[in-house]
Length: 192
Image (tube, rainbow, N blue to C red; front, side, top):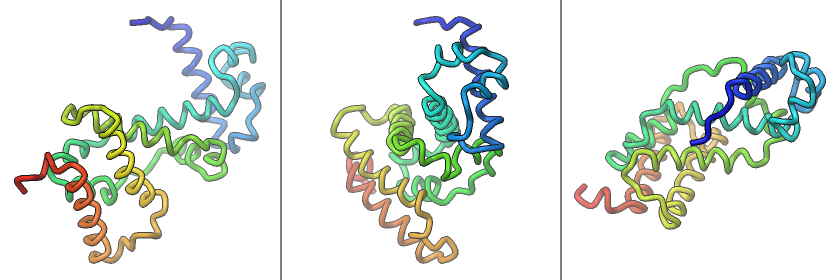
């Protein structure tokens, strides 16, 4: 295991905190390395020891926030036990209000500079499911999870597809997706 120097960790944290504070005031494409370095109390050269550019920093911030949010859920074991409850938790559970820094990260004016974020988010979700320890990570299971999760994530990203005020619409969605889960992973649902 490689041990990271405490100074490196503190500097990187200062850069990230400076970026988050600046994102509360302006979009990522309006933040300069010079002003970020001033807020972080570092020189510009130090910034470039950690990140290639402001967008690499933004990608890192997004991935960190996504990983923390995904890991906070206890729903993943339900994928292998109770597909309907898993879908309800994944799509319809009440989300806590995001802190202002996360709201700033997720603004469309910022997200347009993170074209790979959907793929990163997908990988974070897949890893959380693999971490349950029930499913063997392999190409076949990656394909199955990618198919299922892409569909579910698209419903989160485009919430107009589901009328959340219509219980029959929610029930249809839950039933449809849970049937797909059970058909995709029949080894967990054969006795059902």
